[in-house]
Length: 354
Ligand code: NAI
Ligand code: MG
Image (cartoon, rainbow, N blue to C red):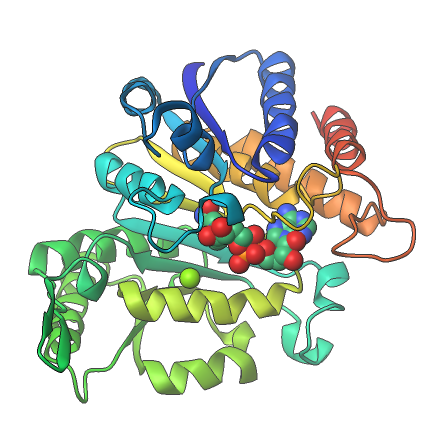
């Protein structure tokens, strides 16, 4: 197949991890007979330095024409002055809004090597395979904000349409997995949660009778995520609850360097990125863990290009090299490999599997 992929390395370790992603995409194209046009653009701090704008018009155009966008990370101390008018993160928020990506997918399936680093008992982590679907463009993050004399207001608003579209996305994904959807809300207190609960219930009953649904309150869920994580398949929730619960869930995986994400909308153009930031403390040293970014490439191939075989092969290759003990410094103090070595190990494994 032919596809155009926008590559936005961004700041800090972004360029180092994206270089590995580029080489992996080139390998997939070569091995499996695809033509990927990889086009690089600026976003975040580097774009502020070059254009005074964290999301320059050129990058917007590049992404609008692409089939998918792969992003490294944005931000760093040199652009973190709280009084600055433009900040790197604004580029990312604007890009998400431009692409209309309302569903944020975060798979959490800890590899045994990483699970050893997690503070939880190994027994609890056995069989954990969760897919979070977080609503990304509504709720209190996007509602009206205002300051009163000695008060502040963040409005939380959701429309039925916003809830329906993300519910359908989550339900379709559940259908391709273990057909279980856990919807998380605070329906005993919040009116928006009551709308979520009735809408999710209706959509699932009318359109997805084959998918089992349960509703849990977010405070209880915060506990269950650590006491019985293996009991969940797809977890659907609104923006704020999703932000908090996905960070909590990253503890299950042991290292931030292993978790990919996909943000999807109605169209096929998706935004793919590792969940971690630009790691300025280790940037430029060639020691960052590239696996989360390579796993994000797998999600890109699966969700935007429909290349399931290639996606599964990348996931297998990463699992295999972790099994073999090819570990970056965040995963191992002894015998840590460099970013390049980790990327090369995955490519070598991919060639064997292809
Ligand atoms: P961070 O995720 O960049 O780093 C947290 C810790 O994890 C650091 O010790 C870092 O070295 C380590 N780490 C992260 N990714 C790693 C990797 N791939 N391999 C090895 N170690 C890794 O979060 P932090 O330090 O809070 O933020 C740094 C900058 O990144 C800030 O400017 C922040 O705004 C930005 N940021 C950007 C995000 C994005 O672009 N989506 C998300 C989160 C933060
Ligand atoms: Mg967060």
